[in-house]
Length: 249
Ligand code: HEM
Ligand code: HEM
Image (tube, rainbow, N blue to C red):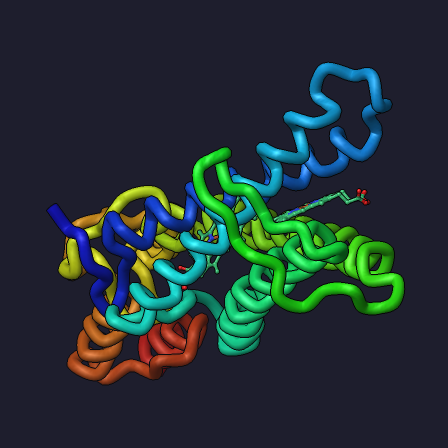
């Protein structure tokens, strides 16, 4: 089993952490929006925020684990053009930063009046920074704004992953779904699926056999050698006129 990352692919631990956190973040966003719409007499009025805060702390723990794992493992380079790779790298960093910021803002709302954060009814995180002017309101606004930014960015990130899969036809999405053996991956930018697809398309266009060895350059070279042997010009169409002139002479 491939637990660790290798330079061109993610291992099982990174993949599990990625999808678990993605699920929790989308889920917490929906739960957050749902719970602030509840009225005091709703049966979930108390339970929903309790669950939201507990799952939020779970995200914080997973984030620490994920960053530690990221430091201890090779980091697969994003695929695609140079500008795509640069953007992907910064978006990934921004995800870690935004997730941490959303969690801190959530913590600051909950602990604004000195109350601890109760996690799954089992343990408590004590309040540290509290009693600041308007703390709950300000932290609440930041929490909401940062959460919206995080989820919107995740929406764009999803579209980018689908573009890699269906348009570029590279391994970006596949390698986040299951560990790929190091042998399958090529250098960043070049990858198996797209290279194969490009070659096949070229071969179909030219109506040539897909057999190895049949390619543009070798065909041209063979034609040139033939023409030279027969002492004819390589210019297209020049052959017929040349032959006719020779016959007339
Ligand atoms: C990535 C993790 C999290 C996400 C995506 C998230 C998302 C949200 C969203 C969308 C809301 C509704 C905001 C609004 O419409 O005003 C909300 C509310 C809230 N969240 Fe989070 N949250 C996260 C983590 C946390 C954590 C860790 C805590 C506390 C320890 C927390 C505490 C709260 C509280 C107390 C509210 C209610 C705010 C209010 O009444 O205005 N959240 N959250
Ligand atoms: C809240 C949701 C999400 C967050 C916060 C998130 C975050 C991240 C981060 C931080 C990375 C970089 C991992 C690293 O190298 O350290 C990553 C990679 C990736 N994510 Fe997401 N992600 C989310 C949802 C999704 C979804 C829904 C999809 C696809 C449908 C997706 C597809 C991918 C893929 C394919 C990669 C690998 C990129 C590559 O190899 O260059 N992610 N994600």
